Amino acid sequence: MDLRKYIRDVLDFKPGITFFDITPLLADPKAFSYSIDALAERYKDSGANKILAAEARGFIFGAPLAYKLNIGFIPVRKPGKLPYKTTSVTYELEYGTDTLSMHVDAVVPGDKVLIIDDLLATGGTTGGMIQLVKQSGGDVAGIGFLIELGFLDGPSKLEGIPHQYLLKL
Image 1 (cartoon, one colour):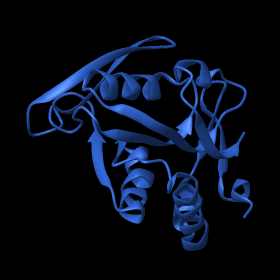
Image 2 (tube, one colour; image 1 turned 60 degrees about the vertical axis):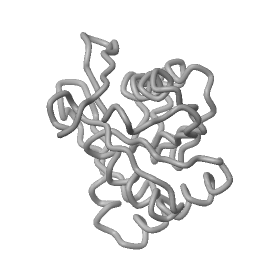
Image 3 (cartoon, helix red, strand yellow; image 1 turned 30 degrees about the horizontal axis):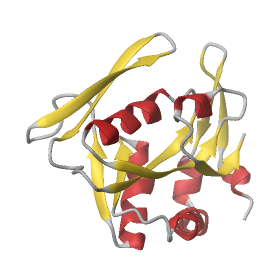
């Protein structure tokens, strides 16, 4: 399936920045189902026992994929948004820093965690999620995206961990 036709380009979303809007893909049941099924096919033999995804768009792909693979789902959120004790990581962005949090008991030593997100851009958020998994004693079983922006250097933040995507822009 040609997923590109379901991605809307929003020019100058911020000055000089094109935003790749996935909402048309989400609104189309065939395109959305295809995306989840294609990710499931790629990761069915990953050995992962949990999927970790960051709010908000990572949840859209991570939760149904966890269901499809019959494995656990771990939500990663901004500080103060999770109800139980959390562990956090602060990571570098192009202009500043950001922080991600997850419950302290979400990843335990020996867990094999698949990191899923909608889009790989600069890699900062994914790099932060890798740190969360590792500092909790888990192993990253793989990293998957709906879209990779090939004109940015996102893969450099993935610590050499193999990643896959369904569409490269």
